[in-house]
Length: 457
Image (tube, rainbow, N blue to C red; front, side, top):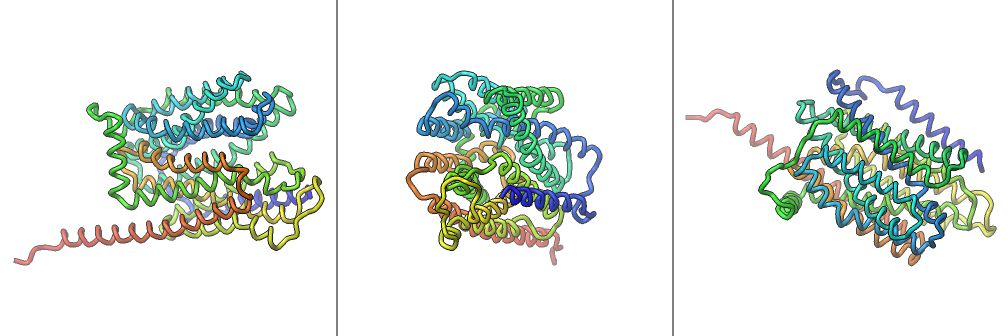
């Protein structure tokens, strides 16, 4: 079965290379040299930030096991991370809008570096503190950087369509190439050099420190609403009113929560799905394959976003349907394919089919990120961007906490079925968002025509 893994990885690599090399002028957006310089600076910083994040991911659970903690205690540590993101995320998002996005990005670096340092201690309370700090950092990673980018892009007078170039490249590099390289580098530190499971966290801290130096030396500050008379409660209220009064923002938040909730649930489920009878599977190589699939999705997204048709609100409906269908495969194979009776060994035929489906889901994830970023830049008001984006993460983190707490309470097929339902619902909401957006555009067009018509006297 080892040949199967290489075939999947090689095929995906060939498709990604072909897509990137075959891009025509229709698939590219003509930009200026000033924008390219700005974009490359952001991509360098974002890649360093993601390297600091990806280096830690594969070794968190392993490190806790090395310290002698059981599954229940480790589960509590993970819940603390998501719970921290849920409780403190909105607060730090509001502070980012008020105190400055650059400061928030620097705070992310400092907070995550401190979280990495706590990994040197086997004390449960210190590790719990590290998870809380990591949860706060995660909220900043997925809000402050994007908020800074959008505001700075607009402040410098670049064309709105050029944002999609930065978004797609950021996901292609940060969630694809950097993730693969970080996985290989972490494996080199732990397995080849024998530096132990803490080594990737030390390396992550170094990458974060380098990125922070670039932020401090090359970025300028920007704000959402810097009004001194607005306290946190007023900012929360303003963000809540914006969500409640604009159906487009509310739909966007629901779509994001449904998809990301399914995505994070998938992270916990794919290993037991592929090895239900303790089959030996190459976790690191499969992870790299998933990231290559994500690169494929972001490459497709960059082509789609470079064109005026189909619009992002339209093609994302198809993405959600494909992602829902791909997570239905574990349920389908449980009925169609006879389960393996022998424990251990290599991946089963059912596992091979599911792996192909999971790669399709990861490709959808790669398409989702730049596309949702594009829609957020269109619909979320600038003055409360970080606050609203972290509001969206509240139901997401709550959902993941509930799943983590009850991960052993339901069969794995039920969990995948639940994720598929959520993704189908996301498709329906995306359809609704497209209809409302089209209606708003039509009304704006009629209003402009009415204003342009001369009065008949």
